[in-house]
Image (cartoon, rainbow, N blue to C red; front, side, top):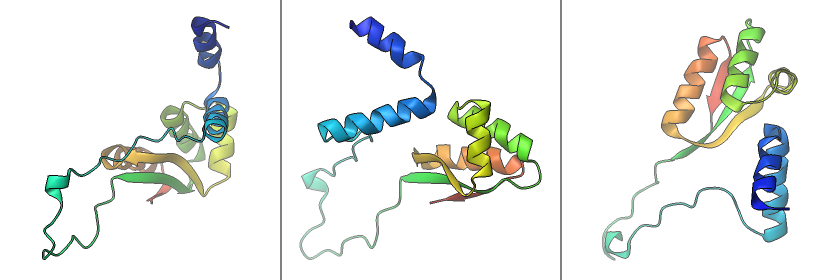
Length: 127
């Protein structure tokens, strides 16, 4: 199979199939597709006598749909927009609430997704 054929086959997959493929590749090769965390340079380390920061600010969030609320159809539309899922998959995700809509997204993106879902009538949590 050529590289172009492989890319074509991947482009025809649903988001759910792609997610499963990534998980299988991670398991087979013992790697993670998650973006690596930024390493702090050695010069940025606190001196031995200095107090370390109490806790690092969280940079990645999971967007969790707690409930779909009264406007279920509107929430399904927003979930489809955010995830790229088909109608059936998005409906199953909304019906199965609480469900994680997006994992390990930046704070700004997580807040934007939360805002869109709440405008559609859903209850959303950021974890």
